[in-house]
Image (cartoon, rainbow, N blue to C red; front, top):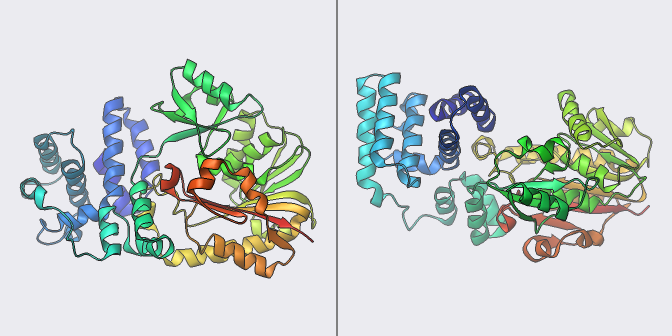
Amino acid sequence: MALDVLTRVDTEKAYSNLLLNQSLQKHALERQDAGLATELVYGTIQRLNTIDYYLSRFVAKGLNKLEPWVRNLLRLSFYQLYYLDRIPVHAAVNEAVNLAKRRGHQGISGMVNGVLRNVIRSKAELTLPAELPAVTRIALEHSHPEWMVARWVAHYGEAEAAQLAASNNAAPHVSVRANALGGSREALLERLQREGVAAHASPVAPAGVVVESAGNMAHATGFREGVFTIQDESSMLVAEVVDPKPGMDVLDCCAAPGGKTTHLAEKMGDRGTVIANDVHPHKEALVREQADRLGLKSIRTAVGDAKELAGRYAPASFDRILLDAPCSGLGVIRRKPDAKWAKREQEIAEISALQHDLLASVAGLLRKDGILVYSTCTIEPEENERQVTRFLKEHPDYVLDAGLIDYVPQAVREKAIVREGMVQILPHHFHTDGFFIARLRRVK
């Protein structure tokens, strides 16, 4: 199963998480086998360029000359031999050789056997040269594209870039947000612990709870009952910074799948109106499902391009606006490991242009003294603080709101990058998604 998924990701540029979930549902593997398949898929993708760097020493004609399934069989086998310690070496090799026999012919199985046995003999020598430049070393040690690492070194320095890249290869933990209408975070913690789920309060998000080894929380009774929402801790901070009050008119410009939208409605006590807009018609149902599950009546869904919202609503219609903008997504690589190989550097400039247009298009919809919160799940300054700085230059009726700090927990103030009216959380700060949030006030 792992080989099938990896080969399709390689040849079709398919999303690994979607393919893997489909395969797991189709084959209904035992929990242990499903765990192994998941580890092999995500681990191999996470370590892809490092695996290829080492494997290239043992494949005379080059990895790219091999059939895709053979290339990916060698990759997932190398991952087991080099990175995992609970799979016996002979088992990993035998399984690879048997797969090669079933899919190919004697020559291919012999080649696979020879390559992997050479890897085993040379394992102690598979280290990175000491003289590698910093960017190349970090890129290979933690398996990221060099262009990405070069940007992070320039923005954050070598040490921070290395920690950031290492953190992206760690398994993401699961966090849930207590439904404020259904009870407190403390009540949710007590319930989860009664149900035998190991859980603790999030240091990042006031409504957040981190759960450990609990399986798929979407199958939990509390989820079906609307007691909690599954959401990353950093993402939960966004609605806290928006700070909507009961009775307000709130616009969520890019709302799907609805995690932040429902949080806004909960914080308002479900009193007032939250317009949840998204450009994709098929995603409107996702927001509606979340609102219904949580028992929220104040959310009104809408479908349309956020750049055209000014044509649908009168100027100064809203007390709060959230623009959780489309972005490069470089803060959520640990959840989508194939994204780091699919992204191209020029996409950052392209998405930045879209963000600029979105910000400009919704600026007039906010009332005087209202709050506009701009957020992204990326860690790129071009999409974050530089975007905000440009917006402020072009919109003198807006200022950064230094009051943002009041909505940020002490732990975040101490670890994250906090500037006036802006906060940047990097993935290694709390082992959460990387997230940027800016709070802007319209003063005239």
